[in-house]
Image (cartoon, rainbow over all chains, first blue to last red; front, side):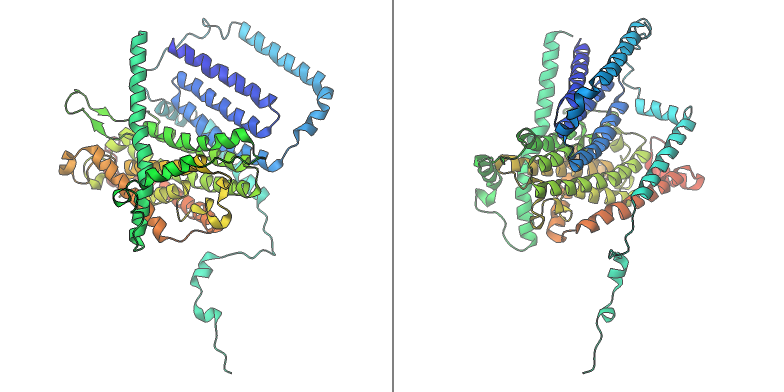
Length: 194
Length: 355
């Protein structure tokens, strides 16, 4: 019963904060709502005994990805009043997409695949089951290829982003720490006979 | 479970939380006193010694002073986030203590089994601490942005860059510990180091110990990495704060400092185990807190000794020195574990996994 109460709390707050993300006019508030939404999603994972995934969600998304979001939003200074000017113009198309998505979700939930009979409740795992170990075992055996491919894609993205942003300017004075440290007084000063 | 049981459980939780939060708050207050006295001693002067016996009431006087001060909110500030930011900074620093094991006890033989003195004994304890402490960035970012001043904003950017950079090398240093212990449970990491100081991870992971502690120093913005809050750079993100809200930021800083010291003792210095096995008659909590106090002293020692880093030097240290070093050590440990001759040596520190 307590679990059900927690589920409705996390799920409800997730939905409310997700609405807050799109409805608030201040972009910083919007990002804060998104962070709160991630927190509640992590709470839902905890209720499913998936503590590893819940913590990773907080660590990666809240701790790292959202910091980047925040940086970008703070740096860009998006004027939302200006962006909203064309709102009526896009309303019919946007409304239709929203309606289509909504109908799809209703149809999917009503199809019976997600009904309690379709997915039997697995119950709670024993206290001794460590899902970090279980996930690790699966990732490094059965899904090793997919895991490695994901790692390589990430590496390529990493190298790519460095190549794209690294610009060396010729007119900038560059400090070489080891050269600075190795400087002797004789290199800088020399006696002049007067 | 009846409502009465639920109530009792909730009451016990509340007591457990108070049992950790109150000492932490008191600890923070008296670390400021300790810090001033120690720095005074190092610099051959007295330090605060007027209020109360030997200045012992000084932290309370300071707290009272800050409490009585007026809270000024700039007119152009975003009021909600301006008030919320110190809370966002303090909360992660405090809730990270939930998984820290302070020792093991049978409550003087009252219980049959040994209980761990932690609010929550999580399987992912180390990750939890990492995740929660990475959240303190938001307090800083929000404070800088909500003040609506370019100096605080630049200060917040600087602080965030510093925290994010050093988190990475801290994470890799922890990964080395996890490889040795084979568990993310803080309790089991301590157990893996049982039996004298030669079993501590300090020995096989000595470079990681240094990286972790120095990165921790940068993470909580202590000298020599305190360019987040220096006067010459207009104090950084909390320039516009005053009174109690300002104090909340330093409360968070000192709380995080205690946490880093505790975690360093747990991960590298054998947690609650004595350096020599026969000294284990002294309760484990005393050892753990003793190690923590020593590390806090080292933090203060740093402050009294080192000049401040320049911003680019600090970034260089994080990205070009610590990050490669942790990656190399990760490879060294990994290769050692899977190389037939070397694995016998390294397995000495991996009791649960190896021989």
